[in-house]
Length: 170
Length: 327
Image 1 (tube, rainbow over the protein chains, first blue to last red):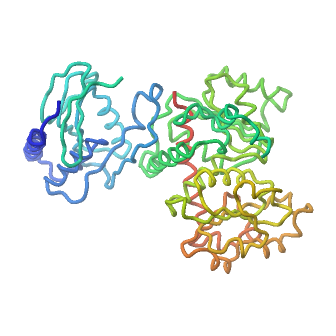
Image 2 (cartoon, chains in turn green, red):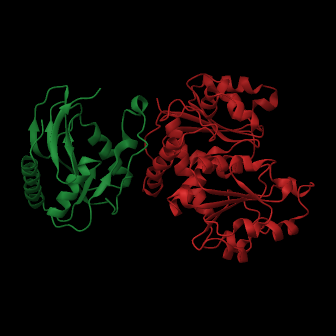
């Protein structure tokens, strides 16, 4: 099942508005927006633009921080992380397309701390689905979904961005 | 060479340590690696290169693994960059100086290996003066141990060749469009041998080896390279010139006349820079004999990428260690 372009766009606008109010409420002026490869980077870049910040969002590739290396190894075609500015004493907005088990977010937070000591980390996702395995929840989510165990949801993109629910590949 | 050509495919795959097109088990030789796997290693190294620039120069990928340097031969660069690569991947790391080890007290090499196996080590990085040593060890350790060849006799130095081609790709992304020359003691050089294979696999159209006849292997042209005894002719128009170290022991033998003569004929002097292509680079695996195979002016000049080779060595070795440790 595919979301339409408009449905996905509506979720993007929803997280944009929620993030704007969140930043205002918490007096955060210049956060660093960081997207997690691959879908998270598209969403982060989109937010970066919509919030009127210059340049592209920072990116994280959490492949080297995964907890399942001894099971699946490393993907040789990983794109490097790009962290153009220091995260020291900054508010970080961590962006991903989907929050599922929480393991990717755990790895991303670990990696962020290898770049410095941020003041805070806020998690923004387009979709938060059931199946959490760690005590990690999104601060801002476009939508909360209940999906069957054999289903995955992924973001196609970057232009246009469209969410798609697919059968899990084992 | 002829011996290797006659070896069947299964043996070839075993020799280079490939389990599948995607995975390494051992990293012994470059000769039979598929191009796709070489490119995968280069791409992965590209990602690891960023780690050395982070405030915390470490990723937790190989946490809990134990890697052992087994060096039977002196080395500074290779030994330390392997150590840094392993540590930046968060592996536990042991340096065993085989000069002072129990083998000197009469323990056989295989007994030493058994003992290290009993300590639940996961990988041995082997440097040895005898050709085939790393492969021998790979056949005599238990299945869960990976062996990395860090230089064996005159045979191969595959991780050096990988970091050299990684460095070349930074300047010349399309291997199919470049001219590369390797200059010096081709006959005794494991670096040259591994490089020639790597460049051939990457389809470099013009590979030249340059040196006095006494230091060029017989029939080297059968490896797909063009031999030159005249350096000026050989490096003309080349995009990459890789200078090899003239090993001290060769100077006292009948291979070359003398150091000064050698420098005049095959040393990279500043005026020879005019002969290579405009964007051409000069490389050297180290250690450099200044004034013998290369002048200080060239080695320290802006066309030299010698120190970049050293930095790149860490990222490339991180890629090889992690791909060889895959499940």
